[in-house]
Image 1 (tube, rainbow, N blue to C red):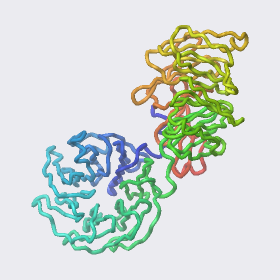
Image 2: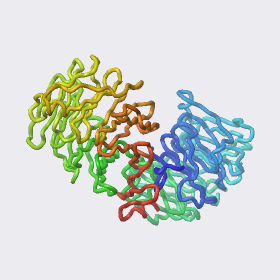
Image 3: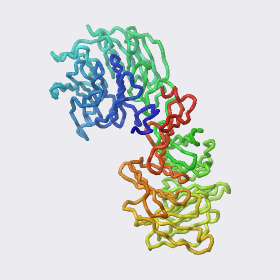
Image 4: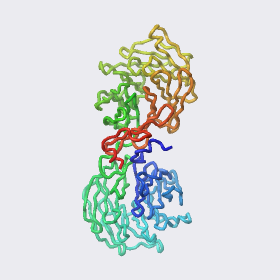
Length: 610
């Protein structure tokens, strides 16, 4: 069964799009990203019907054969391959890796029209051509450069650029270059017009047209100022050509190169990936989308958090607040976050930046209301409850703030901490591994010290939501439960009840509302597993594997939250079943959906998915 994440998905790339190719004869579109993922959309498909990852990151080296049946891919490790656009079957591959491959990182690639040859240009300045049918390299010529290589319609000549940025049309039978006029300024790209009669070149300073038959320049256009030309794209009917810059698209008529239109493409941090298809000119951005105008997308979800009906999805330094099925608003915090916390009443958003101080924002409007100061940079643990925010300091000890009273407190000795969700108790671990429960309003002991079942230092703490219970994981990975109500009623120490011992070391524990279940996160290579434990029956009731390493548990409801592909926050139940998906769409739109379809969406969501 397909994942819920694959529905209503505006893109398949969660890394910057760094290559794109379009074949106007078949309607096949391909895009590739910095992670090495290749997506192929065939005519009639609304979303890519083929995804595969032939190697490492790809920078520009993507080429589709005329007719759309084959695609050539060259990667940043110097591997070149030719694959079927139907099922990614490999027709040919010459692999490189590591330092040996990076010296010939591929920048341009082309398949000859009959599918017999593949040509590449690499950063080492070599033009290489292979015989696909024999699996052998035919030539490796030095003295070439630029970012493109292309076969003519007969497959007998190849268009490339030399190290001075001058176009070269090389006959593959005689190995001789045909004469072409010299460009006034060097080019980085050269391509044939769709009818094969002209060569179009582009560099930072302008565009030029040269006749194939005699190499004479017939038109040119010089750019003035601006950010330079990143790429050239041709209208599917061959009557216009588009020059893509960092911010804009400039369209010229063919073959006279008269300017006809200019517009913003909206792609953030564009690479040289661009195509002109049935929907017009689209430019690849760092957000993993192809843009043709508009404001772009929020980008991948990097961090999630949530409590009760509220959810937080962080897109780098942008925080989106969801209440129920609605995205209420978003705001920018100024620095990418590595963790985010929300109090159970949904009033305070506590952000832990990758670098810098802890910050607190008002969840209702995104206004910054508190900065923890430079001492909170790198904090390994944060808690928020009621009006109290607490942080363990990387330099040692803990600090907490009563935001309602505008008071700050600090203790130098605790090596671990947890704040109850209502802000009434602050649990701390002493240097010897013992546990104390303090009153955040004074810093004094709130109840007699809990008694462990064995002389093993405590490592992790978590209060159970809406109950006077404390969960502790010790240095031997034993989960223990404390009923603090005993201490409150009788003013005596409560004793630990051991629940379970785990083979792996959890890095996070949550006490779920009601007190029956605890959730523990076990880090794994590239991900994590979350275990749900019945505290009273002393047994694991659910094990959810293969989760994002930043997966989080809502302590109110016990739902698992995790970042997901294409700007989404995915919500699962305690058994790992997908419940709901909250997705950011391009141009500030959003959609919330489950297996039955849309639950709610912004007014322009349908247009953003079109």
